[in-house]
Length: 173
Image 1 (spheres, one colour):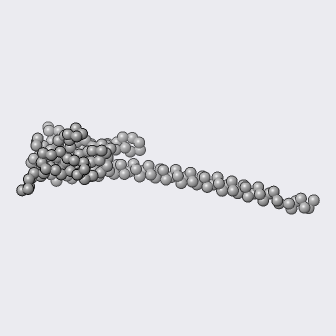
Image 2 (cartoon, rainbow, N blue to C red):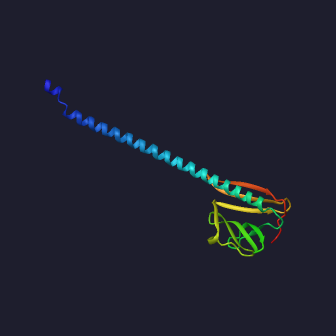
Image 3 (tube, rainbow, N blue to C red):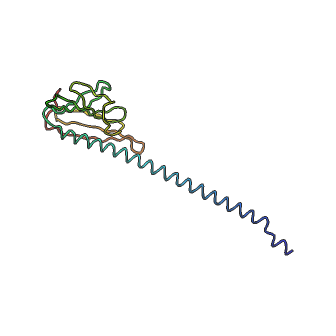
């Protein structure tokens, strides 16, 4: 009878299986929590980057408008390729007249400098920032340039609207 009480052959195998099962459950739980945390962090970062890009674009446009706010220095013109309004900065020099276009194309705000009278070409343009959409308009009565920057935040469409009061009226080129 004493032999049967001290027989641990079966119980050590059961204990080993139970420990392994607990380790697997604990490991899967940790893996799931780490994955969920990583996905949440990535989503928060993407949201903040989209909002940050829209603010960078707004700041860039406002600084550029202030810098070029001279008589016959800024125009709002349509891009023939897209039909969307763009900002046209005209620079006069002894070498000739150059146009710098700030416009939206293929999910990016681009800047392209060309000879006066030419349309911008994406292959020669510099990328300012990636954004979902950008529109610009001009109200002649109030001399205000309105820029709208669209982006997605937490799965919802958002926009930042910027109004810049021009010191000089925008004329047709």
